[in-house]
Every structure is written in C-alpha cells, then in structure tokens.
Length: 175
Image 1 (cartoon, helix red, strand yellow):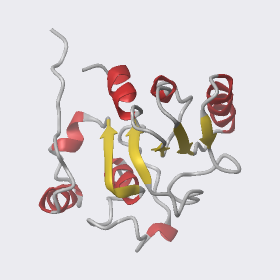
Image 2 (cartoon, rainbow, N blue to C red):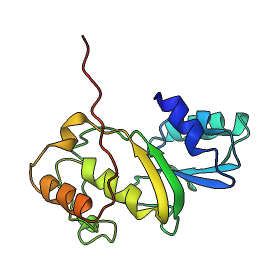
Image 3 (cartoon, helix red, strand yellow):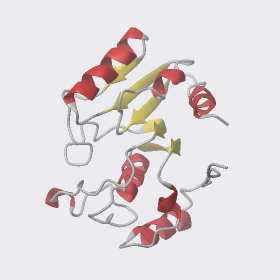
Image 4 (tube, rainbow, N blue to C red):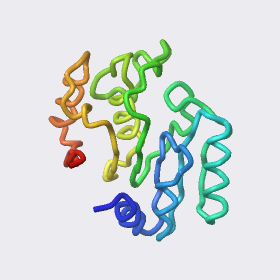
C-alpha cells in the first residue's frame, strides 16, 4: 500500500490528532486531509518550519508546529500531546542528536537510545506521544530493524515484549 493511501486511511477517523515529530515540509501529511484532522509537530530548521506552516495553511489543515523552530528532542514543544496517530518519516541515522539534558528523559521508556544514532529516540518519542489506543506508521532505515549496536537491540526487544510493535515491513530493494 502506498504511503499516500496510508495517510488517507489514518485520517479517515473523525477528529483525529496527528503528531509529526519531525515535520519537514509536511509533504506526506498533506495527503491526510480527509477527516477532521489536526497536525502537531515541530521542525528545527527555520526555513523548513515556515514552509511546513505555509503548506498546511494553504490547504486549510489545522496545525500547531510549535511557537518557533526547535529541536524535537531537546525542546519538545508538545510535551502533553497524546495523539490518535503518528505518521512520520524522520531523518535516518542522525548521529549528532544527543544532548546531556536527555539523560533520564521520560520518553525513554524502553531504554536510553544510543548517543550516536537517533532512530530509537524517534521511535520512543512517537510512542510517548500516542494515546493508549493510538496507532503509528513510521518509516525508518531498514538497518533499524536488525541493528544490535549499543542499546538498539535491547530497546527493540523491550518494545516487542511490551506489545507496542504490530508489524515491521522491509520493502524489497531495486531489481
């Protein structure tokens, strides 16, 4: 199923709240305009933050991208948000994401993510912002499904044991 179809299905519920932790230009999220949807997210790059706001505004999509551009991990602007669904394609394998203030962060329910790769920080950030009956569709690097570097394998195992992972899909490579 194409990402556009997934976005449309996710938005079909009445009055949905979608969290977009790293919103980019919101290209994928613009396709979610089927139901009564509000988009919440943030972006650290000021130009991309303005583009995202513009793209959502001209399409008439209700949104809150935070008061200003800000790092999602260090300056989480939606701390109390619990979303009906999360739809995200965060940047893969970010190595310079860690800040000392993140030690013991309440989002790290399944273990502290490795300081050299943000993949499991993104996953736990999104899970933290889901309602108890919420759903998420997240695109990550294929390596995140099998990596055992640092604490990634332990975090993945804890997430599976806690039954918060329904399915992982690895698309086929090019022919």
